[in-house]
Image (cartoon, rainbow, N blue to C red):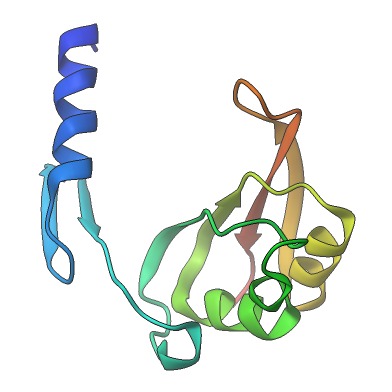
Length: 121
């Protein structure tokens, strides 16, 4: 993919409206939602969750087993949750609810990140 195409794709992803499903490419759709975790009732609905909340030190209530249970239920089998957090307590909470968790090299400015896969079912 050319740099210009990547920029257009990046811009398209960031400009889509909230609360609607948008087809970004023939193989990728995106739905941005403003919603409290307690209100999420989706089950086996998503292939990917990008979890970019403030860190566990700043918002500890978003990094608990209860929150990861909600995300686990919302993912389809083999679905993936990724986060820039690589904290041990976060990894253990993910594992406790059933995720298979891997540490990966992080993007620039981050040493590591976590990828959690919903296995089984």
